[in-house]
Length: 165
Image 1: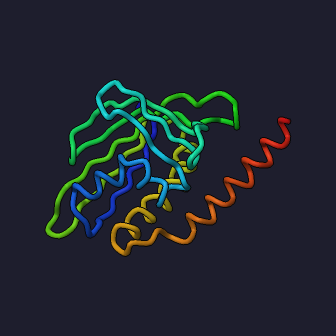
Image 2: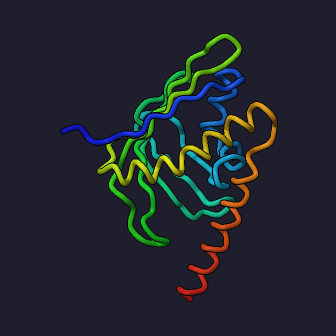
């Protein structure tokens, strides 16, 4: 039986090159993605890591599976189950970019997920991230909600750090 997957499609008024930069540039991802900074050498087989802001704290990690700028990007994805704890089993995140007039059709597929509950959890995460990405590329400002998540994440990280000391 096939594992469940999440599929998210949106159209963004930008160029494929600008969208590609937004998906693969760490300083760019920090703007719209919960202050997460993505880093990789962006070659098939190289590691991908998500860091919390300027810190060296890894929140998610994976490995590049496909890198075809500015059309296709895929990597495995493992999130940290708890601060300082183990990572989840790997799943796969794929982005497809297709020019469509003055727009780019962005298709996100997050698959190889263990169950529908996990799909629902990632849907709750991806929807505001991709919406903030779209808003940022089209207006120059990320969604306000992302700043709130960033602040919430910092408070939780500080509380977790205080408990472990």
